[in-house]
Picture (cartoon, rainbow, N blue to C red):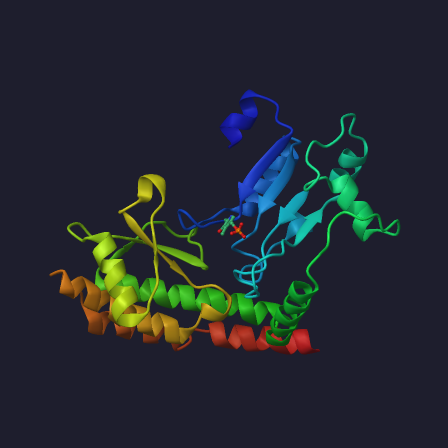
Length: 280
Ligand SMILES: *Cc1c(COP(=O)(O)O)cnc(C)c1O
């Protein structure tokens, strides 16, 4: 990105924080520094991170940060939480040309939410109540406890995967806790394996997109589904599904690695401490 920024002047940098097609968590501290250094505005897709991973929108100087309701927040789909920096709002207000899209015209939407109360669309009240309820559950759990839970279950999954003898696509420290990309071993029939998991165990994992199609599995651990139970279910079922295709993995080592990771290593104590601080 820095190479590109050196070669030309850019008005806007767009980044996907939690990249769900590759399983990469973008190093936002570094990217935010670049945006400041090269004076570009920053738009951040946090669709698969909001509610699962910390987002420092103000600290990073994000100008437009948007997400969804149905992933790590765990609410029905249909709403898109979005936030704008002062400078983004100013920029919209000072536009010389009208926005061509009614739907995404921030100058209209601002009046809808602001004191002027100008009609723009009809928002779904049921969805807003659902979002409120989901946010109350998050508040009850505590943000840091929730982020720790996502991280811990991700680490347990990775430990299990590696102990089985499989590989993660992404190296540390760029692994995304909410979406884990596992490299499909040679000789595996991807579709057949995923169908087996779905039909025999009601376990639905994603396939790869684009150039990663047939090369990786995408295993989600988001919101409610980021649980020790799900990790402990995934490791034996993937091991079994591979065995059905004649590929041996060390299941006992896999489960042992998951349990060792779930057993603690200080993360629990850190989460309990964070909860106490939040309660205080
Ligand atoms: C799922 C996803 C989207 C699409 O979200 P929708 O609410 O389905 O439109 C966009 N970006 C990322 C990174 C995603 O994971």
